[in-house]
Length: 344
Ligand code: NAD
Ligand code: 89V
Image 1: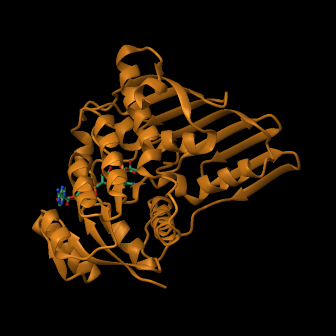
Image 2: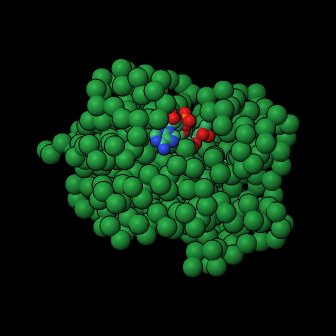
């Protein structure tokens, strides 16, 4: 098997998971890393034994012969880094949120498409094994045609200690977490035509909204509710579980807290435990997300080998990002927002 030579840009909080995952994946090796913060460069370089270290991304692209780059910085730097990768004709993975604005996201897709380089957004939630299990029930046609979905993420977990920047932005839960849940709704029920949104800020110590409720019309006629909260204290903290309800013409799917999947359909009711495995380097409660990082990075390597488009390509993720923009616009206007005008 050909070993792809990759580089990672951005050695922060989440990149450590990506580095662990690259070690688990056959067919790709991270040969160089880059971070403008010398401490992060040293910490991650030492932890993963990477000697080729850069403080400047342009120097990395000029100094290395790369088969791909994995961009794990925060959104403000994404467009410049993706365009730099396109200019150097290096296939690119970019973390979510794909970009600060929809116009940036569209420009990044165009830059990569014009350069003929593959572009995947690291939108990993749909790769979580419990969510893949829900998709498998839908694909089996056990519940017939879905007409309703609720995709829900409600928690009081302190995300700010690991990611302090989340407390300071004017946009918070839709842009950071809701983006995953909106993508999951698209993954399970298809593209969206209209979204109506309400938001609230319950935690006075942060700048952005920490509660969002979105009602969506899907192009296939299904209706869904996507609801997210970081202001919800429950008896047992569910972070980072996404809970799912889908009703279809012939049955229902329920993914409940504790990774319990119940499918009631044409052949009766099946209850299964779809808990994600705890990988050797993973830690609870993050193991669900950590496992999905391996899955999405493996998908990238498979796509590069076969020359196929990643499921969460830049072009696909523009549709998820458009939902984020539409949700903020609709929360401000309190009017439903049509997606077709945004996606033109
Ligand atoms: P972080 O701030 O901890 O790390 C980002 C790192 O990038 C920092 O070390 C910073 O110095 C470096 N950096 C920024 N701009 C740079 C540039 N131009 N060149 C070189 N280095 C640069 O952030 P984080 O919490 O690790 O988040 C990174 C991204 O990952 C965010 O977009 C976040 O939304 C996303 N994230 C995704 C998941 C997921 O499950 N997919 C989970 C957490 C975070
Ligand atoms: O996935 C993310 O982007 C993370 C978290 C799950 C904590 O919201 O920021």
